[in-house]
Image (cartoon, rainbow, N blue to C red; front, top):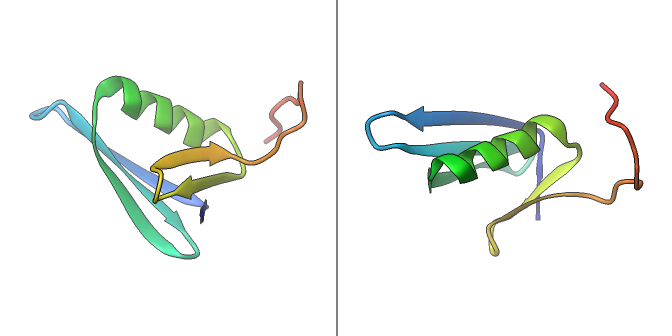
Length: 74
């Protein structure tokens, strides 16, 4: 499981695909070949939720436990 602290997102108009670079203390991991719907969903999760982790074996981006009904605080 990789802790994610930053990300970069790229969208190619030529291919109609996106890629996201997940950055954390363990280094950088690239998720490539995302369609528009998947790209939007992952960027929204990365933008709005904390803390975030990535499981490269199962290719899952996930939040950690959050309190039910918790409002986001920035």
